[in-house]
Length: 183
Image 1 (tube, rainbow, N blue to C red):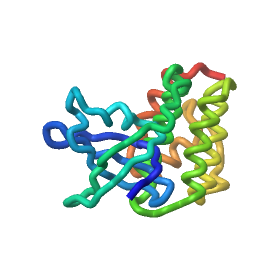
Image 2 (image 1 turned 45 degrees about the vertical axis):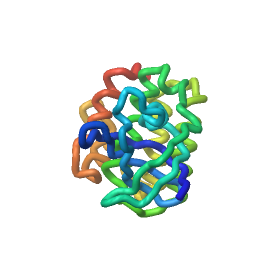
Image 3 (image 1 turned 45 degrees about the horizontal axis):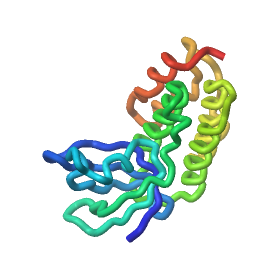
Image 4 (image 1 turned 90 degrees about the vertical axis):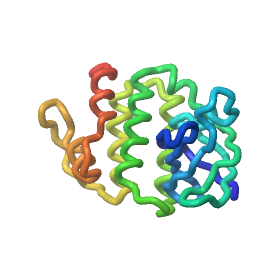
């Protein structure tokens, strides 16, 4: 089957393979295995970078579908050329990985993620302002509109709410606040 997806994260497994976490347009969040993608001569490795919009072919495998070919449609290079923008991108990818369940297709969540990455790559406004407005929009898409916004120890209550929702610490928040200029 052919899918369109955004790479959330990659986890090495076996000697040369990776489990790739994807948020797909067609099926929601899923995992697939990229065989031999850690080999130096792997042609698909560069296409499977975190945050890349990809199109790939999957076949059935034992446990996980296997990625037989991947093609990057967009690498969002303008995001990767800015450390604060990269931090914002990694925040949203980490939240998706920790909060969203596998195989729950959500068209609105796909459109939020795709549009947010496009806006982030084109936006020249202060990154923390973009981050806060997108964070509120994400909570609305997830069904948590109306979370009270207040500051506590220099952080928004939205940050704490998302960590409680994930039931895990969101490490990219620490990185984000280190690299983003205060606005």
